[in-house]
Length: 294
Image (tube, rainbow, N blue to C red; front, side, top):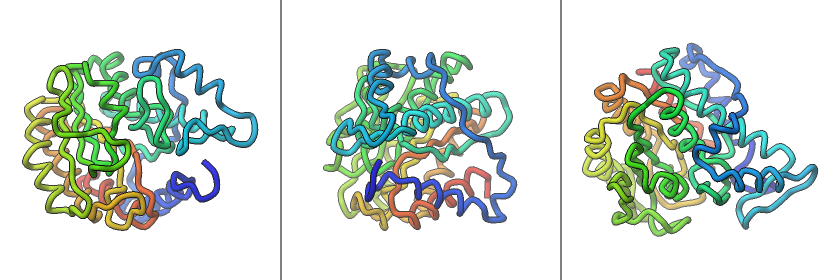
């Protein structure tokens, strides 16, 4: 997105490097396919998709807002991120693997049905959830978002959808300004547990144990999707929570326990934020380690 932008290619390079460790050698790795147009249109308006296709520059940069910038490769990257999320759903629902982690950028959870914002163009987890419903007949999907920023786009897309639960822990007040506890959706399937600047693992775990996890389990999802943002890490420059990598590992294990009971263990995790490379790579390692059952 340009020099000095926090959403940069080094994020994926750091993840690729940490996942080269011997402990991750058994991972099945696949390259990301392009998302099918019909998959995107289950979550986004057609005129919006056409608008970002038109905005895609042949050279240089196209700025969609103060934070969100396209270069000539951005559209393909966004299409492959969404395609990877759908491919992960196919693999998990088809029994190829119990769970999947998608190392993707750009992130997606700020993208609303007709708005690009917050480094996001296509809402990868929303596209994946609707893909699971349409292609695999999944009745109920739970999306857990522990990115430090609230996933306003995911909430927007599923506000009036009783088949998808969206649950989020996030710092508040903070960009984008949504995510209050009383934002509950038309069918009470939106669950927000905001945290305050300076909160660490104890407050995060209390919010998860006290509010988020019981609601997800009661919803009894057939598939759990994770908006896996790691910018709540204490090292991250864009926010002020104080989580460490083991907090993300703990949350992963808790979600796996629910998925084991209600969803045959099926989890698809999609990378969102995380802008300190050391904090990001260590957190991804802790997350992947737990997904592998370690």
